[in-house]
Amino acid sequence: MPKQNTAGDGADAAQQGGASSATTAGEPGARKREKNASKPAAERAVNQRADALRNRAAILAATPIALRKNPDASIADIAVEAGIGRMTLYGHFKSRAELLDAALVDGLERAEAVLSTVDLDGDPAAALARLIESSWSLLDQVSGLLVVAQKEVPAHRIRQMHEKAEARMRGLLERGQAEDVFRGDLPVDWLLAVTHAAMNAAAAESTAGRLRPADAPRYINATLAQAFAATA
Amino acid sequence: MPKQNTAGDGADAAQQGGASSATTAGEPGARKREKNASKPAAERAVNQRADALRNRAAILAATPIALRKNPDASIADIAVEAGIGRMTLYGHFKSRAELLDAALVDGLERAEAVLSTVDLDGDPAAALARLIESSWSLLDQVSGLLVVAQKEVPAHRIRQMHEKAEARMRGLLERGQAEDVFRGDLPVDWLLAVTHAAMNAAAAESTAGRLRPADAPRYINATLAQAFAATA
DNA sequence: CTTAACTCGTGCATGCGAGTACGAGTTGTA
DNA sequence: TACAACTCGTACTCGCATGCACGAGTTAAG
Image (cartoon, rainbow over all chains, first blue to last red; front, side, top):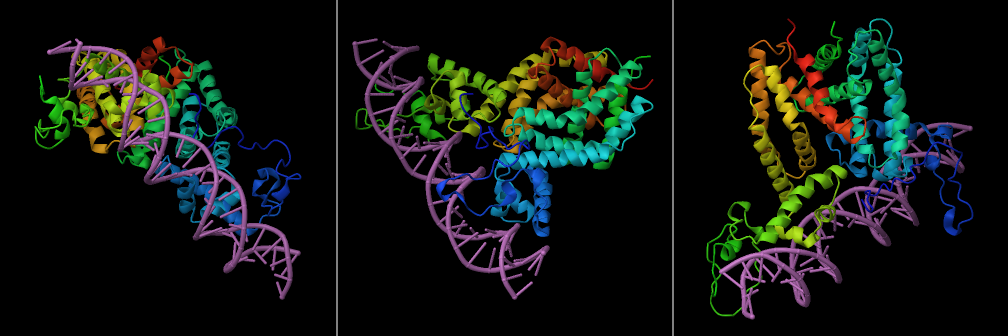
């Protein structure tokens, strides 16, 4: 409570906000090799070499995997998982916090890409089923990252990124309640929490070997459909 | 009253060795200070001074609290939470793993004390409700510990301790399925997982301030009752 | 083919938490 | 009261992860 935070130090974590704050002013030995890794993600990508891009992608892909294997995975572990050197990783992300932030953004973008194609109209129950079917594993992967990032990335960042995905689900649940398809005796927040919990449970059971991944969406849907149904 | 040698003194060294290794012989007070803290928990408690016992209890009580505030709490943090010095804590538990193990045992014993009084007969659905009502916060507290302990206490220890509590719940669910009160189209393992998940979700929502603790059991039960009900 | 961009090992400074060692002071209890 | 039992600060050692500095080698792209 007094102080804490591993090394992430949380304070900064480089937002995408303004232009480059990275330009070294007049410091004495300051002018070094300028890796543009330190630039905000936005204006990079212009100059990137193909292999660098590949490595970046490899890191982003490896991060959730390594973190799922071991939530306490170090930067070195992640680098190994990505098949590159630790220093190369630092070339792309200058701190652990920045890496987690980027991995989170990447994961959520990926999820968005899938989720945004799901048809949310029609029967809310069916729509919920479609949503879960097409994304439970993806969302779960992200939520694994989320747990780890919680301690090292500022809370407002997390909320901000999570918002869009959550809003979609919440909207659906609200509509379902309004149309009397979902029960109205429980708050939407709770239904949302239960939905997340069910997906997490499925993921946990799956990695524990007690549940075949292919069965997961069926179980989740069977459970939620009945749990959420309005008592006619 | 040279040496009372009440099992205590000698036994310390006895960890696994002989009883009276402390040769009363020669030097008056030459012997080192032997804290019996390092004894197996079993044979302690005979000789304990009142304040030591109090401190031990304070540590055991503080551990889940400190760990809930911050899952990465250090030994020092826990000592502060308990209101004692770090070294005193080490006097009672010689390693972090031992502390967590003891806290887990303590928590589960406490839970057992409550759970064993719950009537499990009659309508399985009602019994499930009673079980949850009387223990969700307790079980959740333990499960908070569990998550932390996972990495530092051997898995078999965990299983072994958890077994009794889990068997009770599983038995109830199985009976419910057998009596056609709970749905049979989903495996018991899954129902169990969902139950845990719901309790965890309630705890999380509660600490996040989105759910009044008093409402928690009602929400959990309302959700599970419908989710588990057999389709008549 | 030339060069900037990139990889990546080695080495180092730093910080932090777990445990240990020592010992002086305090307190419960016989 | 006397003494063992206990508390608890100080000051280590140790291991480990982060992040920086340097620099030589490698690779993609104009």
